[in-house]
Image (cartoon, rainbow, N blue to C red; front, top):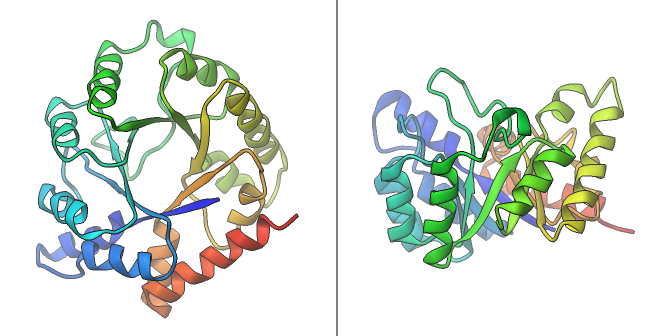
Length: 243
């Protein structure tokens, strides 16, 4: 299983003072030293954490792979097309949210697929970028993602993260969705709200091949350092994958 570390919230701390530290690029390199398989960042329209310059520097500095989270804003799709990260994951985005609150709405109730999303997918695939969609773990969204001919889906683990202590249902839903997505020919990723306490059961779902974890790792790094925080999570994921 691949483990990508999201370093957005290193930039969040920096932006609180509009200074030059801590540096998310230096954090990303530390993550790689500790065994991260890749780095995730979200270049938001409001630039609340990661900045354009960060993205340029990350593309030049990291030795693993970059997963760029983005909405369908023309300027950000253009930046992605120019920089050509290994992977782009389309996510919903609202200015008033604290963090991403759910997956893209691909259900029939939402109508035809968003023309901007369809166009953005085509733009990025045309320049060789692997495209993933961040979706809720339900069969209808998975089927519609497959119809859009993307390479992967990232299953939103937020419901599981909120309820893992009192219900097995969200984990079961994730497991079913992972099976359905793989059967539909999609690579299966997962993320959102995963912590040192709840990652293991998700990592044990065999169909999931990639996890993206950010806030919990960055929070832990304040106490133990980034390399130790990444190594600890890496070990938890590895232990969950042992047959």
